[in-house]
Length: 336
Image (tube, rainbow, N blue to C red; front, side, top):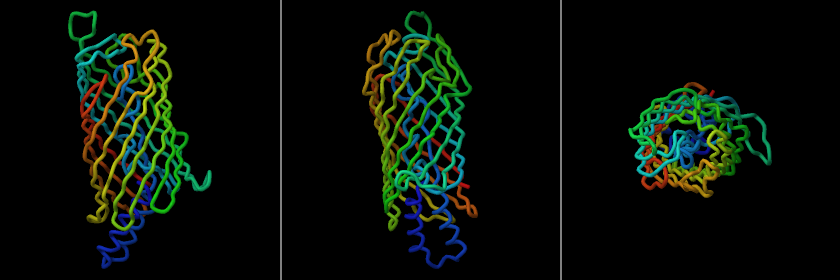
């Protein structure tokens, strides 16, 4: 969460609970100061080869994902369940598939560190890395075969490195820049239906803005990215560049010893450059997805440290040339 967002919650507490014991007020103020270093990183599913990309709706969109502004380390765990179907023809490592059905579960573990220094006119600088583990079940009809194929794979996914996170604060506003890099560390096998890795790099420069009204606890944020992929040399397939937008609104409310967050999130992903290479047998194969859903979270101060959790459900409502389904997220972050 951003410090500004939690300051909004603190302002609510100060008005609604002025009679609270000083120790309790100090604990809440500690949450305001310490929970500023929670960041999220995208994971699998989007458009392109296999109907997926590294960038995922809901990965970097809400208060728990806002870039850090308080110095020190943080740890974060993210769980994603995705279930989807596709009636369109989709190019995969096993060939062109139709009527695909996929269930994917991802557990991503990682963390980062925010330095106690200011760069580029006051920017707070953070580095982070995340390691995903995937369990994928997929079935589809592969063109050229007589029977429907099924496969289950699990293991290490493609690691996310974030060497640059910069956050500038100006009153109720925060402006962000970050550069997630997805490395092809996951297992990939040409000819196999379903893999835990995509077998190419993705560079995803992102910018964002967060507004936090300290008086009423209202928060709004939007982040945009431009995912640029390298070629999958095993299939000679270059997935086209992806423009993605995530936005959310959240209200912070003082509940018990912490803050309850409730809100909604929406996303729009559009492939803006076509697929290419000899493996792109379906041509440009431009993909798109859009969706919306509710979210809820809670921030709990533990002494001078903070535990923050969030759950959300995002339903895809408009898709093209990709799977169509639901994203169910659960996130937890601990700020030291």
